[in-house]
Amino acid sequence: MADEKLSHLKEQVYRDHRPKEHFDRFHERARTREPDYVYELVRCVTTIWGYLAFRTRGIGADNVPVSGRVILAPNHFSFMDHFLVGMFIRRRIRFMAKSQLFSPPMQWVYTHGGVFPVRRGARDEEAFVTAELILGREGCMAMYPEAGRSRTGKLAERAKPGIGRLALTTGTPVVPVAIFGSHKVRNWKKLQFPKVTVQYGEPMTFPLEADPSRERQQEVADEIFARIQELHAGLEQHGRKGIAQRVREQQRALRRAKRRRTAPA
Image (cartoon, rainbow, N blue to C red):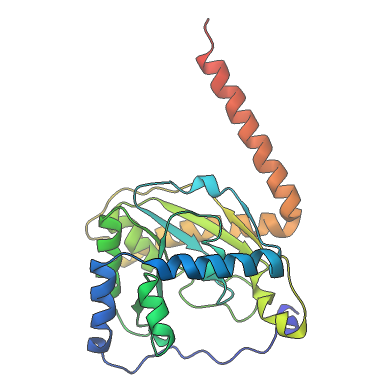
């Protein structure tokens, strides 16, 4: 069983009983300031750790636009996922993270690194306001479709509607991201270091809708998550080398097709 192989995890706390006003200052900073040197410092340290400890490799990072607004949508197994998804992207990613993380001393790192809170278990409109403002400035942000971290080492059965709402109300392209192997990163305490792969899929776009219904939000979230599941299943079935080879072959085929279209008659 997958969960039997995982190192012991603490129970998750889903509801933060601190009042909404407690988090206003974190949202204000995220809305008015960009990530600073702390982001690059943390990125440097965690990238080295990711490469050396987990032999992390990326596939398809060129699917992430180098400019313009974009939402990265990764699956979520580990606390390391925040860092793994950013290893192969030069852009500074803004993360929506659970509010329980915003406590001293780490809240200083999160706020300077451009992270902003979402209060799980509450209808947190402030988190969406912050996300929409970041995307309105052509930013790059990450949002987990599953919302919480998987405790079993397997993908959730269904996404939460939040990412569908954000994609529709902002008209922002969504890049599905499969992180494979990160459910075992806590096993480093047992001197077990899994091999992790991060695959970025092709951007998905949806028509702008000012006030989508809850059903429509869920429909789009399910479509995004289905693509993540497909990418993750491919890595599980074919492995890192197999998927990388397939991606290279697809790229070569696209280049050949482009040359044929542009060749003089």
